[in-house]
Image (cartoon, rainbow, N blue to C red; front, top):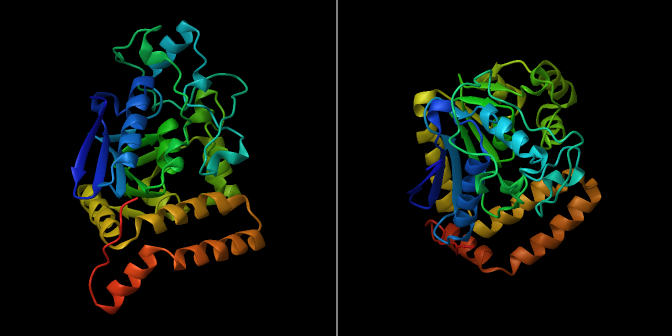
Length: 304
């Protein structure tokens, strides 16, 4: 299986599973990943989703061999994930679509073009997936990236379109695009400045340099940096706490607010929050949250 799925109480853990290629991205792997996200979204027992990689990499970018096969088959790689580059709607909860200007594909791994993908041009594995690269943002449930190692190009995009990022302090990050003759792809030019600021985002994109997980945390790309041997355990503990103590409905609304309000004026965001707050006062989760607090017990929130 190119992506593994495990249950840890109310937490679903998805693992990219091409360790011999540092989990380099292929269309088939992307399709499997999105299918598993949809399954987790539908499963009422799942409240939080973690995404990580098997072995020494999170995702080292698009696989060179897969790219060559896609180009040989005449499939526009920019359509593979419904590209959002330059699209201001990239962060909206409803997703959307956009088109590449040059039709080429995303950031590669760091020079590791050896090996085979095991896929053939023209096979169903190379059919464009209609779900966009920003698909994780359309889920109601929180998605947490657990960056255990190499996180490059498209891999960095997929980390940053999660709601939270935990990273190993020694994980190697890079945008990589400029060093492959490419551009800031799949909405990274929209997301990165909002997380790190324009100057820092510009520097990372223009240079394509490699930096550590510790620097990613300092730049605001990750909410926590952890020694690699403790990374998954700490991310799981945090996810379990969310699942046990936070209302799934509240988390879904907050996720929509945070991603969607980036482009709203302050007054509009404030007024919308007031409307949502009034709605929450009449909901069962508010009553249960207050009851749990007054009775000094964990709340028993309903699933989505």
